[in-house]
Length: 325
Image (cartoon, rainbow, N blue to C red; front, side):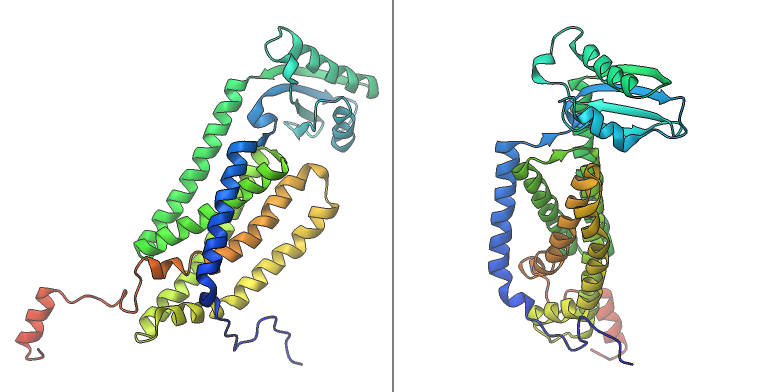
């Protein structure tokens, strides 16, 4: 029985033929993404905007009823709460965003925390109060700063690794592809005003890892072919390399999407932003590996003899001594 192949072995798609139009579209999308980020701003969650955190223990239960709590606390009118287990399975941390009118009003944040705890105690027996603390705007600002630095450090470290592993042109190409992926993800969240929290930072880091993995596979094949086909024009060589890795790229992306798309539509609401970011990242990461990372090598001066070892003066003298020059 013949195996089903989504991508035939003799695939010969002329990807580089449309590199200029696709680059123009991508640059426009990057500009629009940052326009939305600057003008609309990101809808920061409690992690990045500050709020009130309460911690309770359900002493009469083995596990905390997190789905019920999320629905119950959400009905209080403070937005979607962030509910996480801490310590034992029956201990939870609940964070809610403070309304604008509560900012700067003494005791307002604590009163909101007490309201949350009171709602829980009214619904469940044997609930122990473990804490009622305010997450200040200063702390939230530090979270935002550190999250941004983490993303920047990840991208620069990846570019440096590829620079050392391949050549500087490949490092620049990978960095631009990652910048493209992160920009479009931030732009989508700014445009639709989906909540931007630490979960989304984790999703963006996952996108960076996925896009990097795909880009390295393409770059490795490009480097091999540069050594193998010395006289082939670079655009044709890049097309060949992308087509040779296309089956792997398509299968990896489809495998991930098969798992993520049901989670996106039927999963819990608390995971929607995380899942949506990763699904978008798979599409833009695959696209950027083909249409961002590969074509930029032409404009950065990669040629068919880029990886041919250059003869030094010592090598020339040695060849002359052997009578070969």
